[in-house]
Length: 257
Image (cartoon, rainbow, N blue to C red; front, side, top):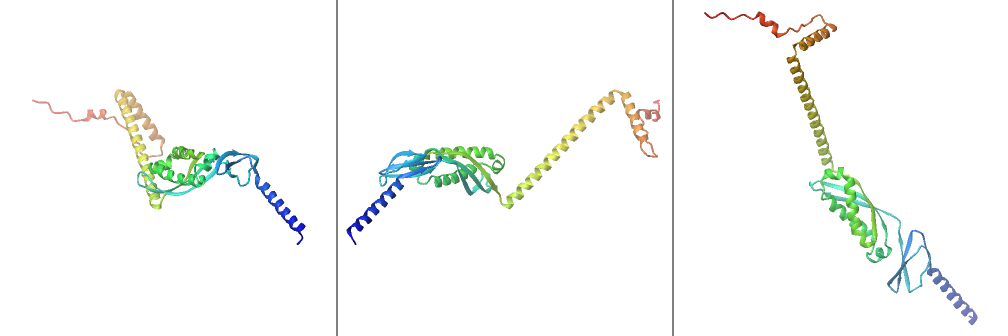
């Protein structure tokens, strides 16, 4: 092979290597991306968005997405404070606020956030009773978000929202809760019925006292009752007779000698 051909191949190889190095040096970061740049293994700066230059073999760059991430926490076995076993899952919304700490302070911030979300979910819900899990979800969501935000703050992560999705019970507990709800409805119905009877008795007692003080009112009640009976289709009319009228027909006691 002629020497000129060899030199041409060498020049082409060098040119290709130079093009590859230039292509590796230029990076384009989107608006929601940042690049954590290290120089000879040491943190240098955070760059982006836009076009940035990374010196080959001297600098290395790690891309970080700043958009809000959605973490679906898998179902966790939780034992409530009243010793009820349930399965609870949740969804966590978080985003990277400090790319430097997210890369340097923790090996994999996505996995770390998932693990700490699971442990926090079991810890917090285990301090509450089953009724609180079912009725006070907003309060539990707020407590979980606050604890997760505090735990991940050292990693440059901001937890914006936590929402409990499902609280699954076994069939035995479902039947027990249904019986409890039915018993509660019966109890309320009996209380309402008793309160109605009490109010009616009080009203009747008040009416009786008024009628006892005014005999004319009692006579009007008799006449009203007669009108009601006469208006009905009946062959028998019962005439209310005051008890006082019967005293005249009582046998008089014999005079004492």
